[in-house]
Length: 76
Image 1 (cartoon, rainbow, N blue to C red):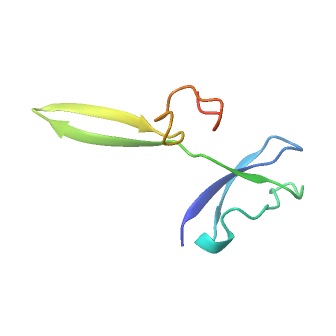
Image 2 (cartoon, one colour):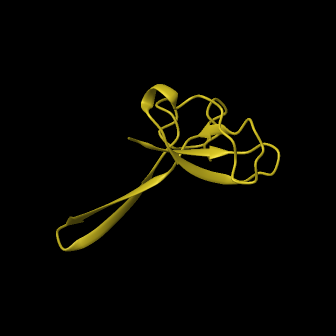
């Protein structure tokens, strides 16, 4: 089951929930009990070893911005 990240508009809390993919976009209740938290895009880091030097990259955003500043998905 995938892990999704949510943000509560009432208290700005960010939290994660394990949910089936079929319920990923449904509103959630935050740990403080406020209903209506919405799913947000999560960033993740990936590391690789190339020619003896470690490389780290962050990924996130939508396909059109590839993780850059984007008005459609809110990535910065």
